[in-house]
Image 1 (cartoon, rainbow, N blue to C red):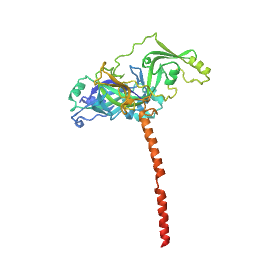
Image 2: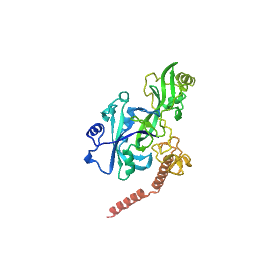
Image 3: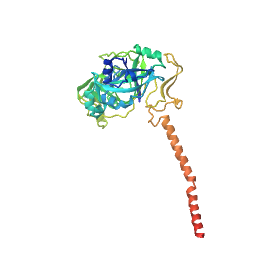
Image 4: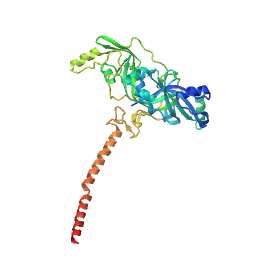
Length: 379
């Protein structure tokens, strides 16, 4: 799984009746008399449906599926997992006008209608900063010097061009290097039966999202929307002459030559074509994926600067060795953790088999029962 960050504005909860009513309609916030004096309460847009400036596309159905992974996650500073300053305690889904949406009702809808009807949906959070422990940060947040940046993992992704979504495998078969981040945001056209069926930017549709926490950062956001990754401040400039052509006709010719069956699923206004179980590439420099032991890079010093020495790349901190999993996934048979568990399981079974072979308790028990029976007869 891969890790991403998004940014949005932090909005402190002011003690006005109008503000209370507006926010309470979307998310549950404590009353003034119920607020603990050592905590600073805030609300913020956590993530929004649609495509952000880094060409990552969030479908409403994926946000709804990940709804129960938001609450009780840590709030940190600049995504440094050891610098915890607070936590998220509530979340809500709202439409473009700020009206609260019922999550159970959303989850009960068919995916197609859910995605079509809620592309202006936002997820808002309520959180606290430990004000007495971090008074300076609390004051800076109150003065608007920080933004909130969502942290999440995703297990897979599809490719979107215009209104067409295809799997990575299908996009790669058409010649798109989906593992190359530079292709996202570029213009592309999909050709089928000599007709252009889609045109637009190459976007990444995130699947199997797990929200892992939230950070405060000083990079400016683009309110009220969210921006993928704190390193990117503006939309990529697109060269109209640089257009990627994804030609299904050529793919069909190649597949027929190889006696393969081609997919005929894509037509103009299409949604997801097929499911794909390929794992996403892991390219962020922080802890990534469900495997929290994996580090893309291990630096000699903290904080990290452009000239900081890199001690290791693709490193397993659990075993202090190079990561052996291509997908950086703990379900990968090549993962050191999996190999260790397998080795332990094999060795345990071997020991149990040897113990069973050498175990004479059953034989001795039977002998004892025979002796007892003989003794009874002697009476």
